[in-house]
Amino acid sequence: MKAVRIHQYGGPEVLTYEETGTPAPAPNQVLVRVMAASVNPIDVAVRENRFPTPKDPPKTLGSDGAGVVEAVGAEVADVAVGDEVFFSGLGIGSEGSYAEYALMAPLQAVPKPVGLSFVDAAAMGLVFPAAYYALVNRGALQSGETVLVQGGAGGVGSASVQLAKALGATVLTTVNHQKGADLVLGLGADHAIDRHTDDVTEAVKRLTDGRGVDLVHELVASENLATDIGLIAKGGRIVCTGQGPNPEAAIPLGAAIGLDASILFMNLGNAGRAGVAAIMRAVSELVAQGKVRPVIGATLPLADARRAHELLAGEHIGKIVLVP
View 1: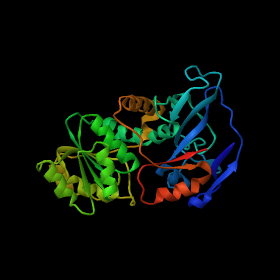
View 2: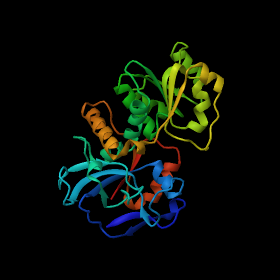
View 3: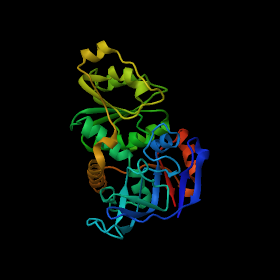
View 4: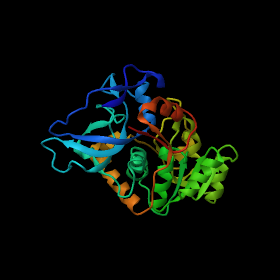
């Protein structure tokens, strides 16, 4: 089979489109013919060895995707050959999804949302589970609350905007340009705040009648966390999903203490395979209800994975999907 692999860590140039052996499922594994695989920042982190994994190069990159079950191990009872599935969580201790075939645990092969193409389903992986885990599992979002998504035009951000709205929240979000504003408003955001033309703190206070928001979903914590303290209401929560460019962040402790602020962090991997699968099934139900949808920025052949990583490093909107 063809796959995109790395033999050493580095920039996009280390991605190699090459022939490798087609794997066979162990008794407790499923083999999926990959129809589409999405590109995520975690793939870049693995490629650069900023996210150390148990499996060293050579290895196939890719966290998630969608496809058709090709074969199942002898001990697999609840997944069948021919099932259309989408999946997440590969490429850490295992080979990834940038390939024509991928092995996974049966739990990871979740039924593909009805009516979605393989490309659309692949674009749901990782970003929607991450946003759901942030808002629901960690942030305990309640209907009627107000949410600020810091960076709503990105992959996780656009998922968070839709999920927060579907869960009954009033949704504010920051963007970097008018194209981003148009996108998030079309996804259901109540207000888009342009970082380049608006004062974010002033805008949030104005839009909440001075109260602040109940929950901030923070995707660039090292840049925004100190500011976030001034955006929440008393008893407000900040859930940090993305680190941002720096390894540390300082906060105004007095202000945080005075607000009874909760600063929460998250790693989707802590949900475990069963937890991620349960979230993906919940998201699938929201897809069926027409409440959320993927946002795709580009679809490229698997052989163009280097180009996909270059696009990911620049300013872009929506998911980048690779098609074998």
